[in-house]
Image 1 (cartoon, chains in turn green, yellow):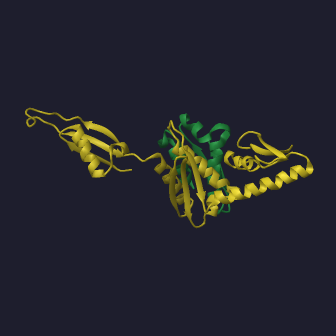
Image 2 (cartoon, rainbow over the protein chains, first blue to last red; image 1 turned 180 degrees about the vertical axis):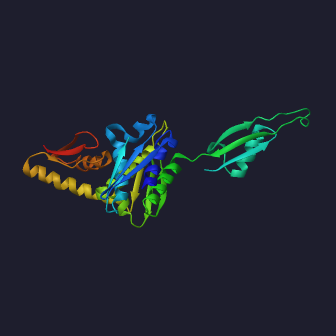
Image 3 (spheres, chains in turn cyan, red; image 1 turned 135 degrees about the vertical axis):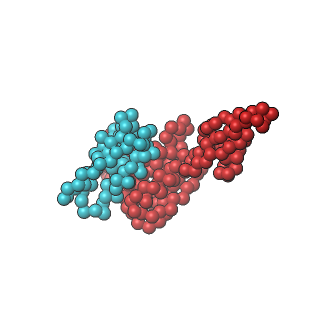
Amino acid sequence: MKALIETIVYPLVDHPDQIEVTVEETDEKIRYHLTVHSDDVGKVIGKNGRIAKAIRTVVYAAGSDTNKRVYLDIM
Amino acid sequence: MREITASGRTIEEAKENALSQLALDESQVKVDVIDEGKKGLLGVFGSKRAYVKVTEMKSAVDEGKQFLVDISRDMNVSVDVQVKEDQHGVVYDLVGEKLGLLIGKRGQTINALQYLTHLVVNKNKDEYVTVVVDAENYRARRKETLEDLANKLANKAMKLNKEVRLEPMPSFERKIIHTALQDHSKVSTYSDGRDPNRYVVIKPE
């Protein structure tokens, strides 16, 4: 899942070397936290959060086969 | 991404050597000069060869394809991505099994993939390319469903003599609704709300 998040974000940003994804896992949920270079924040959030929403849609679809609820925080 | 370093007596010759080794032409690569070289005396004494680094550049359309291939792999869905280009833009057709996961409920996943691929293909571009991601003829089936829905709700609007609001849809789906009812004599359509929650309203005349 971490790889998927990185795959999605990599071509969207100008500083792909500064993509960072951390994971926090509890019994019921897995929470991923994505951070990017400060110049790239708009490129992963978008107008009205449209890009962030699209990234989450794909990540949540991939997480639908696990029993745990998946969350993705951006920044 | 292929990348080679080649040499020659001049920069031009080094570049030609690299291109023939990669079997590419100049428009498909990026050339960095590492060493300009020196002619030397009589072209023999003290001469230094020129070195260039040549990197294959993927076209934006290829990058879009690679993006979809990589995402599908990370989602554990094996797909083949077929690319069709025409003057309107590019269509990526996903072929494989288990495509339901990539399409999602009411196409929300395939629409998200389409939007993200559009961003990748049009990144740093002046001209704008339309990107469509399709799977198992989903776009055609969805168009039919939306046209049926448009007609059904137009009848409802007429019968109740009240405006009927549709669920939020992306712009290319709203357009299908507007187009389906544009010649309808008893109803008109408009969109309201802000993306991504913009929706079509069918209004009786």
